[in-house]
Length: 422
Ligand SMILES: *Cc1c(COP(=O)(O)O)cnc(C)c1O
Image (cartoon, rainbow, N blue to C red):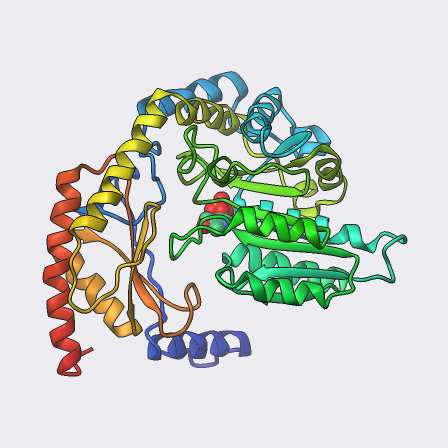
């Protein structure tokens, strides 16, 4: 990399950091899309077959939602102008929040929902504010503990770190496939205020958190259970209400977080929990208090998306997605790579080294497929992978074509790794 003649410290540190990322094949690159999010996307003038977005229901470019966005802008303008507690809270936000709470009412007692700009913000807000309950004088000497699943999404990890810095909570990591270990840790824990934090659907593996078992543990040890269902809302359950509907659990100690930029196809997120907990989030959730409210037109569009998710169209799209997943499991035959038992639209192929994952992704690109290589720190060291995602807009035919292409590329990548090319 070219160094400037008189680099100031920050600039030379930045150059060194970028060089180090290049040396370990960890440098990431932006790709500019030139068409809407869909199963075929124009990138640098080429049409690519995309198996990488989180637009699981194919709603991101749905004509009814495009129309709802225009209608929302005509009705509410384009900006909210202020944070929710100043003057940014619109009737459009309230209408959406009532409907979002309704999606969880069978699973969370006295449910109330709040709409957030992003899932990242929702997670940071919920974890810091709910951990902060332990700072109340009543609890002050009895401590705060946060139990966080090892493979949690970065936004949960960051929320937990921030909460620990603010509250001096002790943080414990657990393996969501080994709940005996979580049980043991909790048994030995004398903290009075405890949170268990988990992804609903694990974002890079596609497997589900054992929510019913986690809830039983949360009840035994009087903990709150925070479930980030970014990849389950819209996808799981007959009505697409997510992982709580899937497991048919019900409690007043679950804090549910759904995001609205993935299966819902729009943008934003929501937190849903017992109304008393939600009221504390409004009072103490700093990212909520100090961010400008999402444009009401977005809330209006998400409401239209929610009705599609729950209705016949959403149900048909989920049934089709499940057919695609079944085809994948029945027809994908590989010599060297493992497929996982994931029953969600997230299907990883773990290749191991960054070089192998990048090489495979490049081969796919040459065949007009868009499937990026996912590398650390998004996944654990040594587990770089292709993360394949299905959309309800994919046909059975294009999934079968992808399967043949992957089988062809597996042979090429394997041959290259045998000869130490990658
Ligand atoms: C994408 C994602 C988020 C962040 O949601 P945004 O709305 O994109 O900020 C949070 N948690 C998980 C598990 C995710 O996959």
